[in-house]
Image (cartoon, rainbow, N blue to C red):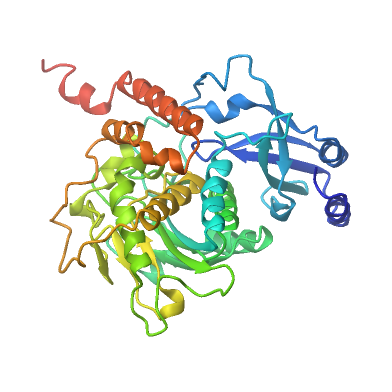
Length: 453
């Protein structure tokens, strides 16, 4: 049960803010918000009686709206109980009437956790760190595109017109003027981030047409994942208010840059707060090298969590500034694993493999899980890579979506950090999505095969 005092505090805040409607949400495997909206009194009563319920099948939904079932998640679709994390309660500022949102964990009637919940998958990894006396710290970076609003989603996207009336051609990376083209939109984004308590850092124009990047400040992985979940939804909704779409698709344009979710991660000792990746003198610790080695060994098996769709692999192209390798190096963006500059307290590794199309809970969980396994196995990383790695690959990343799913299915070590039923459900979802993909006629087929074969 949720602490009664905390419920009273939230109820008082909702009344003070004149909020009558509450969105009660969980992230599904794709990172989409699933749940229900309800009046304030129903929300408060539901928390007090553990009676906020949804069918467990919400965690078996494919990105195209299908369902998967297995020995645990059956077609009878039993109810699960949503447990709101009241620290995540915030306003939904784009709504016309005062409205609040809250992210939930999920349990069964007997109090056991719903193991195929993405939020629970991340929690399992964090519990393993806690058992060792460690606390991970993460900071994600999200790249995304603004595109024209359109009613036919089979049409190719195109950049929206900025305030100058000109469409961005993608020739001005890091341009301040490129950001200013959409200053009304970004001013509202900053305002909404403040209202939703999303701790964002810098904003830059990236290399693609109307492509931008926001950084979420470093912090506790679950809090950062919750903020990232809110951020992606907020950005979609804010873009709609400005007659645009925002897309986190890994590569929406076939001839230009993809969008990544880079994950910066470090680990501190819970008792001392000291970063265990660096000595006092600033040297790398052996456990830091093991963490890197774990990323190198296990990221290929975790690709369904960091590159979840066929399109995700289109981003991983050496010709478009996206690493296709798992080399590591300092201050080198051509490698998959980059060690940024900084003192001992900020020693970290940046995982540059994940795409922006990922579920942030799963991308963070996967990255931390790989590092954890490396530390527990005391793996040794190879020497730092020297020079540009864009044209060089160490041939460890799977070249295709389906191979990534197969690697995950055959990796027994992953069952040390994730529930087997979570891995099975994720695998089923990916198989079903791929089957749907292969039954869809692509524009390439109609262009080159329809009349020429």
